[in-house]
Image: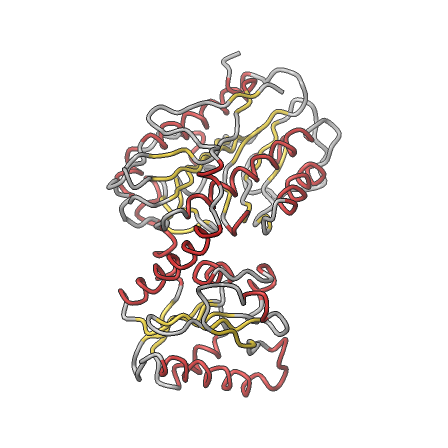
Length: 420
């Protein structure tokens, strides 16, 4: 396959400089402290006395602690107490307390109280009350008083009710955490670049495995093997498909056998090194034959959409103004457009989500692009009457100096991009 890396006008190229793609031990420790400080700043700005974080991504962002990320996403079995002022307490899964002992952001580690029926059976009410009593004491020890806000997310409804019974007003911890995560702290971008470089190598292995007769799952597994070998966490979705399954988008990877001359589309969605999302999309051509004129037209539209919309990213641009200025999707492709023009990205997809001009009134909200944001620019082009589709996506960084840097660095297939 012949591929080429193309540069966009007015966008700084990606870097592979080891000093800019891999943080030092000292930088890692400072990043952890800075992320905790950003979390606390958002709590203080909203008059929140403390947050109780169950979402494993939020726990990792605020404390640096990683443990059983997928398991913890569906089981309230470990959590972090993060006050606006005062000691941070990590409540770790039983027997795992030693895993976070080295982290500079955690003042105390206690065994977690698992507050779900799965763990407690008919003792759930008593267990939840014991959990709430412990959180209540911690908030009061940190200066909280009756009527103060305590932020919580991803817990059980009974946990929230129990805190209300103890005099606290409950709010959603996702709000301060999303806002904290949206603006990257110094050197955090090195972790993102490191994750991208590792995942790009994995996608090269995946692309090399695309051949007539291979199944989608067989090819897709190459990415999984590589990211685990490079200390990534997991792939968040199953978005790789081929031929007629490329349109509409969001058809998950399957046992379908790929055929020569078909398109193969991929969205990485990898929670990679240091817990950071490597999120870019590419569409490949299976086999060695030239692309058809229709395939090249689809690919060119998707590429033009990405290129045009990336060029409009800049600090100070409002989300609604961005949507109004975005590349106009031809009418026959609007119905199957990707749901977002662009979205924030850090440890996962995050604030903001910027929708198309057609969706602003029903699904959109306004805001402003700012230095420190990392964004993914999306394109999906698939005709409303069917046929194949093309998925492309790039990841960019709005630097403190106002310039926009291309973070993702995966080549495009010239057989699909050339005019023939």
